[in-house]
Image (tube, rainbow, N blue to C red; front, side, top):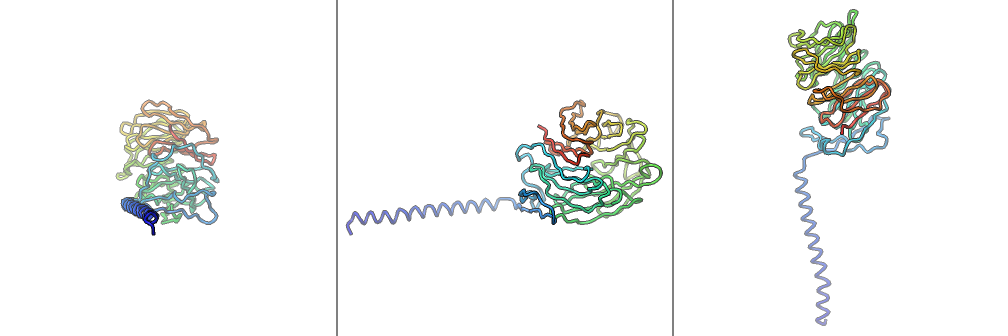
Length: 383
């Protein structure tokens, strides 16, 4: 073979071989790097929701809505890492919405239905879809809801004609266990912040309530009864040691020491004959909020009993996580945000067409949520 042809032949064979070897080596390096990356990535598992027969997500892809770390139970990617929120309206309820709760990571909403639709629904904040609906309570009752420390487990409590607290695995939709009260022993009204205790009203006498009781939800039994006629609104202090009780006809709010069984403070101001519709505390337990049938929301100093602020024309309210802001539902169907220190309104949102039944502030303060007699829940981003 002539020398020139030999050289050309060698080039044709060797150059592609060298190139193939180089590319193959590069792929090995990349693969090795990928394997190293996977080793350092947290063990995150996707748990797709499995809906009961007959329910759907209207064609939406929800495979990534249940994402949790099996070691810590935490949700990766906090809401602050996501795209800006947009206003959302959740519909499909068969009656008014009684209660709403927001998960600690501000990624999910939980709703409890009202009379004729006592369902419990899990909603996704960012995407704006319903990702789980569970039913079990009597439809002839109102339902209050709460998230537990385990992101997979939620709690719901039914009122009259139901008398139960139910624990749910919200990922699978399976009911885990039930605590049963009764007409005399307890109609559940409030759940403690750690979801280990409940307050229940006891019917009796000419008033709405013949007293109230404290329940240990871990053991599933009543542990103490309190004589407090006319109890209508209930809440726990953050440490679970104090009950905030609103009256049904005297316009007063009382603080009860649950270990000693006695009243430690009373707030009067809504007026004789007025019903207290809701009560709450801030995260320190030092400020008390009450809403009444007189269409006012009042903020009280827990130690002195002094009224700190009064919001006129408001029917429901809640504190922000740091206690500096208040969200309220107004008589005119608007949702408003207030600065507690000054009592000044800073935001106003319009959209509901009926009475607002509940409001809540997201823990990260990026949005507020409102529920209404118009059978909707609305999410309002705060710029």
